[in-house]
Length: 204
Image 1 (cartoon, rainbow, N blue to C red):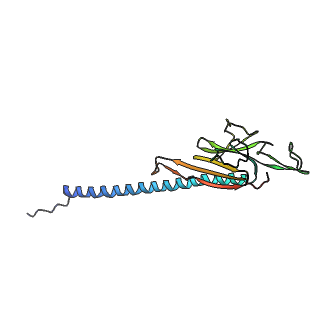
Image 2: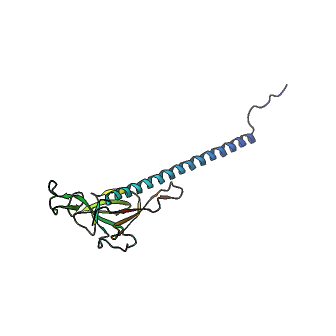
Image 3: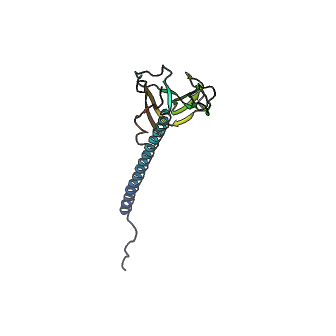
């Protein structure tokens, strides 16, 4: 009687198949993990760039119409930058006080300076923890204790520095945004220091 050939796998063949499947599965997992990390890195890079550029553009637009620049509450108009103040204080135009457009409490036939709500008030740009915020006060306060009314300009703000030269009426803003995450290959993604220069348009 003839013996029928075996149709099953031997132990060696089974081990080879399992080994090959293990290598293929490992390669696929490695590829997916690498792709996910690359996607997270790209997303984090775009995010921090957008945060920083949006904040600098918002401040630049407002500063072009500003006056009475003061950094760190020192005498406005120092021609020797301190190497970067960490806070910027300035006033924006509330309108021109003239016939037909009266700004209460302001000098006649002159531009009225202040903040969004108050004549003589100030606008402040500074860091509150990891946020770059825009705050307002009725006077050039030395300390802001209540940040709840402030508007967030950028999250993940690592550094914010300001220089001002009164001779050219030029403000230099430097901002670095950094986002940390254990999912990122290097643990963090940052913009480096982005710099913008704004020349005030209004006469002093």
